[in-house]
Image (cartoon, rainbow, N blue to C red; front, side, top):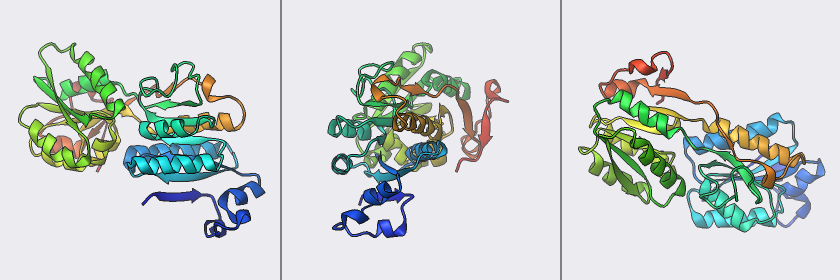
Length: 328
């Protein structure tokens, strides 16, 4: 069932009958000068939840009188399509979309509505914009492209003798494909290290694919992937006993047992997108002219209990730089 929350509305508005136009949330908002904007999230997991919070917090901090119609598609494409149709029928002045499939579905349905997305790695590859520097469409937003080269270096600091690195990702998620291609290029800096790929199409595949990788790899790299993020406890229940460290694309999977990351902060990415949306609502800019924005600084984070469970110690190269703690 689609999870729905209308933030900032009174209880009376929430309980209003559909047949009374004057009592709909949108009509109630219009009465006191509020604007209602749509916010659709692909699925619930820590990274996307944080991005949605960041969007809402940034818009609120700007002092705008805005109501959010927040919808979660629960990773279901038909849900996304229905949400898009409803947002279009309500003629919202702005739609926020969290994750690539959500952004693509909104863009296909709402050709004339400004759309600000986040948790999208490559807007050009996703065919959401003409150019990262000048989108030229009704879509803009913040990218969750993470420093994959630095993450690979982190693996090699924890496991300097590694000869084989694995990766596990959703083969149909364009963001994940893009990150793995970057990983392959970065891996050429380590001539004696090879990569083994494991692909999944749903959370139900994760256990079997992980079991197939264990015994063949010295470490595992997990990109920012919605399926893997949702199934990290399943993955690490296999990798941790096997003493296989998992380096992740962002902090969220550390809460599911990942070892470490030099990753993006989805709450901050959400705030970037929220401020971009606020600029649009204030009439300061249009998506077509707003370059895609990126996180500029990154922090190394290490899950100390997992490090101890793996029998590893903090590498000298990151001592004094890394945030070390319990992320469970």
